[in-house]
Image (cartoon, rainbow, N blue to C red; front, side, top):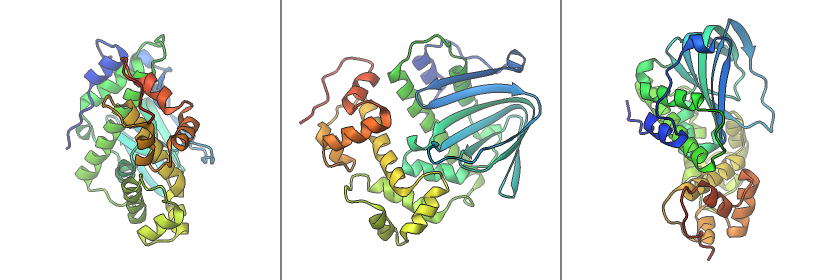
Length: 310
């Protein structure tokens, strides 16, 4: 099993917790604890036996990766003629665009919800290979669940903290990416990995800086048709061009959130396939609601020189 650098100490540092809380089913009976950090949602809920059906995704819905853990009881899942059970102590990665039927047996569940667009294309390929594969506790270090519990149980009265939320998003993205790798390596899961989609995601990762990349050139580079690419990306709730846009903007946001020195805004734009800083700023503001310069100022926890614009 690969090592996971995301630890409870990182979470304690970011949310100001000196000590994490262990799961206590009795304390949360009939209740739900839910916290949001930026685009990240973590929650724990206790319930009796219920049946749920996932609603068909709308075009405006953001595709999510869900990471479930059955603390007690069990989660029975069915979709497209397949069935599986997540027993107490086990966990599973799921994709929000799939038509699931759930039967939750009397017990307690925790979950982490992360927008798919926060992951790099290569990480998405690994996640898709691990989807819907129940995994025993041995595949996920207990420290990870302690860290997630600390996020769920953090005080509700904290002031908004953009720098903390951005770093927590990055930490949890790294955590789930490593969990997916552990699952695929341990189970040698390849059945859910589409060769065309995997190749397309890797192609995107390698061509983020190409300003001429469009659907036709992507299909030509992969030796397939635009229609096939549309069908493959539709299965994960997006399109080839939307996936390219999200990958570029997520990469820019990570560069801006890093503490390393940055190039000029024009250079940052060119590195990620934008013609100039105006085009980058317009796209970035549409996605994040603020400019790259504003984002940099919000996520940096200490004063620094302004991002160069020349």
